[in-house]
Length: 250
Ligand code: MG
Image (tube, rainbow, N blue to C red; front, side, top):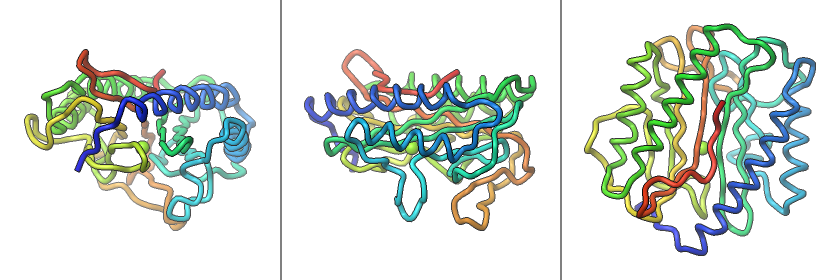
């Protein structure tokens, strides 16, 4: 069942989303060669505590950190470590907060210093795929419409979406119904109603193979160990169309 948010719940979710935007902006301003992903994680965690929030990912099913830091071939759920960022890295940062009983969650991919043209094209396509998905969040559309535009745009660009992980509803839980795959058929799935809030999160890679999960049980990597990108945005359906609460982007 997809939960409809009340006006007051939406107010808090807007505020949380905007707070989380500020926090991730501060973190991304520190993503430069020589910085470790652990340092970024501690910084993010302190910033979340400063606003009386709780890091939503920390201890979620045993996840050890406040940030997911996924580098290059890592697609999502990368665990912060003592590895230093290097020029040319592609870093996906995913962050979540619970504050006043409601969640916010979004992700962005950051080029570290100068990156290859191949990497830039991949990030641009993934960013655009998120934009296209968000545009479908209008009352009367169906969840499959979001999935379909993302999947078809990504294939037209010559890339492949990750099929093993999905976007989701969000509210009093971080992961609520519905699941939002990054591929699918138009005009299928539940109808979108005013007051629903979705996290849409295209994850894009170069190969068409199944992803692999490393021995740590979290870090998800491409089968070909080539690069991938991930953007996530939180969006609600209003009578005027999609309202983006927060989104990652270039
Ligand atoms: Mg999410």
